[in-house]
Image 1 (cartoon, rainbow, N blue to C red):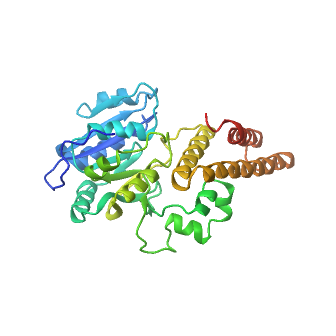
Image 2 (cartoon, one colour):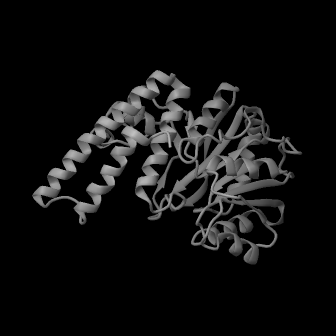
Image 3 (cartoon, helix red, strand yellow):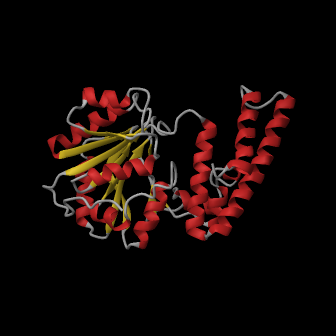
Length: 320
């Protein structure tokens, strides 16, 4: 369990904390920390937990941001486990947990803090997300139904994009004003007491679904969540996941199986793994056919190899 933050009340005069998890983030961490410093001034406690980057991320933080509290893990322990280290060090309330490629806009900290103070039932608040092109999107999500859990992340997601089951899950314009069950995790402001109630993130998730699972725990503990429409964060997206597409897919599905087991039980998690493995066989066959016909990706042989590696992992190596 996490050590409880030393200050758990919430007032405008109280210091907030920001926890940023990094891994190979040298290209993004500067902009992230500059924006936090500009918005929070001297009243914001900033904590960076670096997952053993080899690109100079930690050295950059030490040199350019000496006032930031920096912790470097002995290895890459995953996003949730690293975030828990930062949360355990935080003394402020609220506690913002951000990706290294998230850049807050002015007024965000005050806006999310005021929203939490105004509604004692809220355990978490997120700003609106701005994509690289400047377009805005809501981080509000519904807890996945069994149908959404089966389709998300597979080729079925593309085929069923307009279906009611996925529209509800992604909370798009077809579901106006629906209160969120959980919030996409690029920038989340938590009430310190809510994090203490649930013990922080489940460190069993290396990457992906950790914020989904945390919101499930918050809901079970009686907390709600909301989007603060007056706050904005720019999010690059995918910067922490790395360039290894196979590893990214493995992490995504390993986390998805863990969540499915916790939400619906181990038998469904086993079914989901077998179903995704079968879908990947179809995907591999489709790519091989395109390779034979000379169609598809710019590097069809490399794409087929990638899909084959993911498919073999789905069948034989998913526990590793």
